[in-house]
Image 1 (cartoon, rainbow, N blue to C red):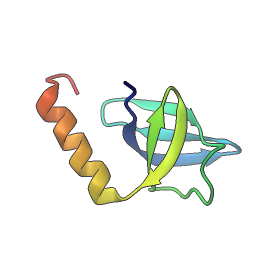
Image 2 (image 1 turned 180 degrees about the vertical axis):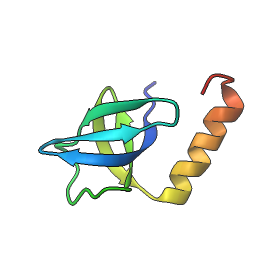
Image 3 (image 1 turned 135 degrees about the vertical axis):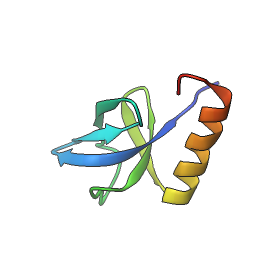
Image 4 (image 1 turned 60 degrees about the vertical axis):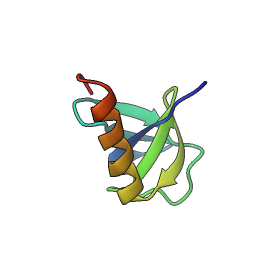
Length: 72
């Protein structure tokens, strides 16, 4: 089973973005996502942005992760 984590795009570079996951910010490959903009939420799996996600859905998912993991 695979899991993708939602994150918020902070900065955009050619084919990459700096994404905020709450306590961690990481460089993510975004070559698969068209029309990416700062403040978009994306799903990230294995260092790759997979798709854009609605902000409400992203925040709800992050809330579920927080309930499941004390360190999230």
